[in-house]
Length: 260
Image 1 (spheres, one colour):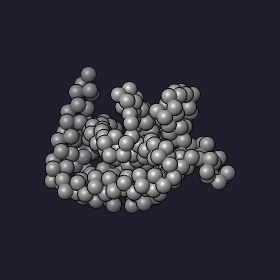
Image 2 (spheres, one colour):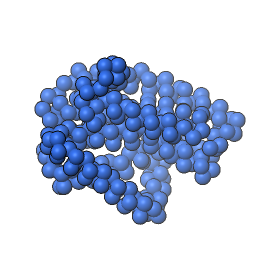
Image 3 (cartoon, one colour):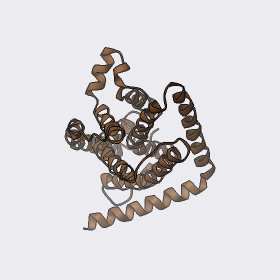
Image 4 (cartoon, helix red, strand yellow):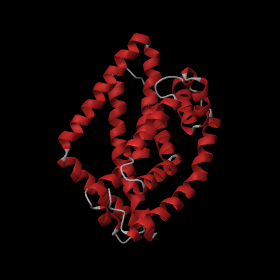
């Protein structure tokens, strides 16, 4: 019970910090939104050359990519920023376990992300003629939660890389971009060369994205597609937590956590 109260307090603290930061950098947030909107407009007109149906296909790919990218990079970006500003010791000096701090931080960021995701969906509905029923929207909400939970192991693993290998963000960005391509975000995986199709077949992201498109576009809820990603997430989550704890404690002990 005390743990839950502590997490709630931490989430509130991090939310307050994020609100203040957002208010201070509101112009940056507006520019970021406009940049994303322009990208979507370009995608829309390029897709209209091919087919209107293709844009629907792409929308769900972009939707998945947005969630996956958030899950993968939120904590790594935060750690990188705190390292760069030399305030990471302030974060870990809070009298709670390191994992509790990071979990609370992640939940606070997730709350903000859901508001961002709502704006993302509304833009597509209002400006790009994407039709979603109320049931579809509820489905997307739970689908988002599922992706975040099933890929927690991935974001924790990337956190380990971030604190262990300095300036690794370019590698992480490249890795996530490759996963997008291989998972079928922009085009069907059948268009990939055979060797890349085999790699795509091994990625849990491919199955989760296929499940989304089948569910919303064709009303086919093939839950068997989620078995493999769920197994992967269940197996690797405790391993990633253990690995991260070992690395973090060593770096904190050696005083190298703040080196960027």
